[in-house]
Length: 281
Image (cartoon, rainbow, N blue to C red; front, side, top):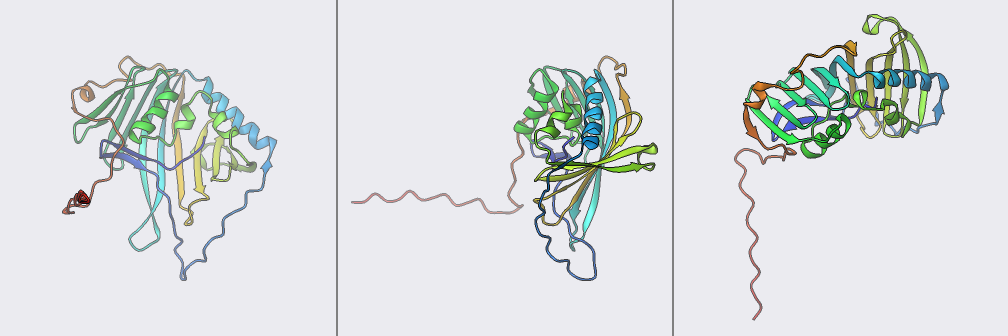
């Protein structure tokens, strides 16, 4: 359940999410620069047990559906951060099938993985990138990020062992208390993280499913906040044939499945070619 900054682009076409970092507070006077926090090791058994049980429940599901609403801050033109949101409808089947439909905000996007290939589809532009994929969801998520900068904020919820991503780096975890507000149910609030990130998560007290997460990164001097609300949980639902493919996407115009490269500003002159040095006589 680690939460990281992300950008989702296919072949230079922006298709959705961008969890970017940097924030500033709105106040009457300029805030003092925050000192880098010191992480004090604090591992409470109760907090770790809640994270373990929630992770185990997710790992035990053969099929899964949920909705993720991601919200993230980005500085405005005048400094104080604006909040942007995206919504993704997620369906997965272990060990080798995944569908992510992101209808809003921003350009809609669709991602399909059927165990053999992964497809990134931009319906408005009618563009699709297709590439061979590894035989598992986790390996495919890593491949999509490595080859095309594609990352989903909820990736750590659908891997084989969600708790491993926490246990490998966690330096602190403590229990905060309960809330009756988030997700329309009673949730247990836990804070955890490491030198890089501070995370707060709300987990259903009865169903043990995560309902909301918020993260702040220690490397971000402005302390931008990133969050995700999780709802419409269905564990082990029956998924119809064709869930992890799209005929419309297959027939779209093909583009390269590759990492987006920054483009020079419009009207920028091409860089001058280096002159070949004259040979000494």
